[in-house]
Image (cartoon, rainbow, N blue to C red; front, top):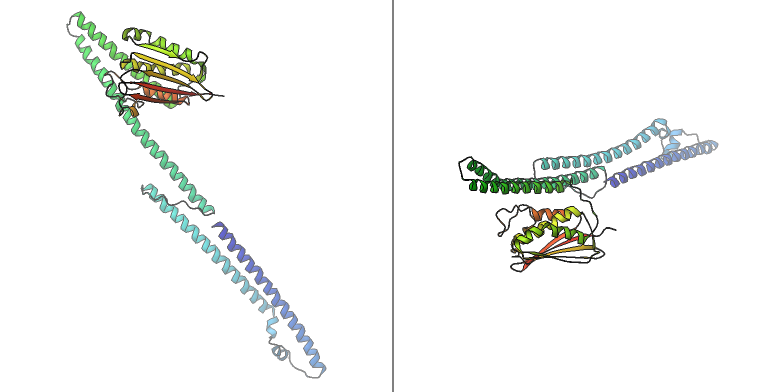
Length: 373
């Protein structure tokens, strides 16, 4: 539109200049006619044929009034008026187009406010109005994307709070019941049993609260993960030490396989917590053997945790990293935060995690930590 506007102005200027040229040409012609008149009059006078000025001018198709200042002024005024009308027409047309675009944007904004889906404003023309239209379009799209994200976040928050309430409801109810029973006159053995159950419920609540806080810190990025070069064998050794007592009770064994000098770029403490969640789940689901292997290349370090447990159902496999998700074979006291936390730990370090499982044959988790150069 801007190009058309300036093209119109250029045309008007050309017309104006052309008109001025015509004006000067007409003035020049009148000057020549005047010279012819004077010359003719002298010739006729020499032959004794006296005639009036008017007769001689009329003979050549010219009136004496054509040379008067008033006539010249009227002609100049007419030419200027013509150019003025042309300029006014161009300006009026341009203003009309701008007004139409503003009204279009006004209607569009009204549609946005009334939630009517009419995203057909984007155009590829030039000019300030078109730039403004495109900016309105871009802002509208950005606001809609943010609104959709907020709606999704709101739904996730509602689900998250509902899951927390559900997880807390059972142990809190159990604590209330045990507290009421302890007020009764019961044998000491019964009281000791209730106290043990209360201790378990409090530990479950503590684990749940810690898990929620850690996930919240990861989401808000207030939990600082310090990526540094570590020896993988040291990391896995501490994981193995964590489960020495549990392996003694269950009879499970943990095998390690990897090079002594293999390194990985990750946060030692929190990566250990993530791997411990995987090993803990494996042992709790009947695995008698857990094999942790690792290998390093120029791109990443891969840590694989395989177990010979009962495996994961195919329908549960896509959901095991979801918060508070509990599979069919999950224990009653399972919270469903461990694997979600592990995935968040790996992802926040720029790594990757995947799982492969087959029912009654076992499960394998693969963690990849990419090298930093």
